[in-house]
Amino acid sequence: MNAKTKVEFGQDILETIREKLKSKGIDINIDTESADGCEKVKVVCVTPDLRNSVDEMGKKPRGETVMVRIDEESRNDLDAWVETDYFKSRSEAAALFMREGLKMRASELNELKEVLDQVQQAKSALHNKAQEIFGRDSK
Image (cartoon, rainbow, N blue to C red; front, side, top):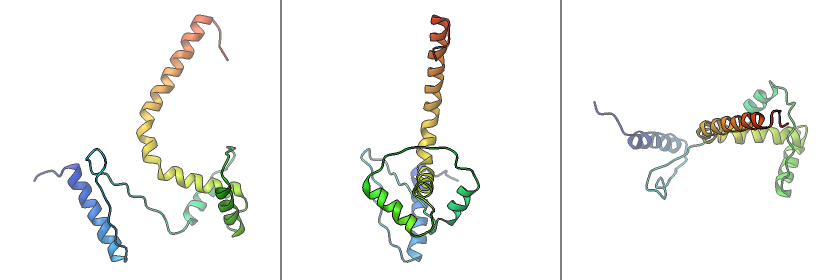
C-alpha cells in the first residue's frame, strides 16, 4: 500500500470538510495555492456558542492583570457584550475573547516555542556571564 503524501492527505481532509459543510447547506470554494506554490489551508472551528468557554474560564481564577489599549470600535463591541448581561464587565468579556483568540492561534505559538526556549537559554547565559564578569547579580 502506498503511503499518501502530505498534500494528498490534506486534500482528502479538505474534501471531507467540503462535503460535510455542503450537507449543511454551506458551499465553500477555498483557494489553496499560496505564493510559494505550496497548498496551504487553515481550518478554524468556532463553536456556535460561548458556553463551554465561559464554563472553562470560570473554573480558574482570573488573578492576572493585563492592561491593553484598544480602539473605540473594540470598546463599543465589548460594551455591547456587557449590555447583553451575559458579561458583568468589559474585563470579563475581553478576557474571554482574548482566551478564544489565543486558542485559535495556538498552533502558530507552538511552532515558535522551540525558538523561544532558545532565546530564554541565551538570556540566561548572558545573565550568568554578566554576573561572572561583574561579580554580582545585575538586578
